[in-house]
Image 1 (cartoon, one colour):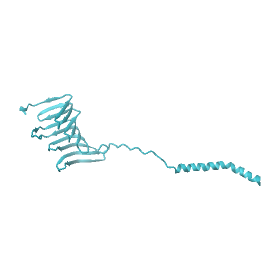
Image 2 (image 1 turned 30 degrees about the vertical axis):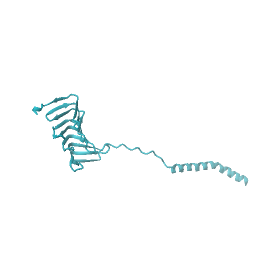
Image 3 (image 1 turned 90 degrees about the vertical axis):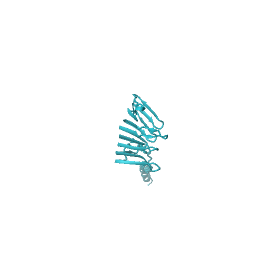
Image 4 (image 1 turned 180 degrees about the vertical axis):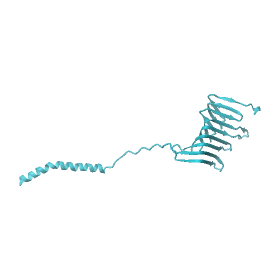
Length: 205
């Protein structure tokens, strides 16, 4: 009997390591399945420069605190880009009034403007016109017109800049230049490159 039990035990003991390895494998599998998976957070995808809405044959008006018309924008189509919070406008026409009521108009084949309309880039057949008026002392301010393929207008600060050839008309005087930096509030005009001008004498005006 003893010999029989020993023989059974000896044979069984051969399979003990295999059984233990099986349990170990099952335990390892269970741990792998049960353990939480940590994945690195996904990087924020950069905003794509695509319009989120558009308008056709539109006009938008803004008013100041007293209810007076401050600006009016017309266009054949407008596209808003959320990544830069800018608006691209085809066949644009802008009317803007400063604090004294002086009218400025801007037209172009295409415009790129910031959210509040205080900064406008005009592309293709660009015109900016400041109508004649008077200053705080009652002195007359002549009509001024800017023309070129590109004009950058700062509405609130009354500046017009361009890195491309422009034509400036002030009253009956006329200037052309390769670059322009005009500040109406400081009464400073910088013309660079090939500058030409025609000044009409006061007596002839």
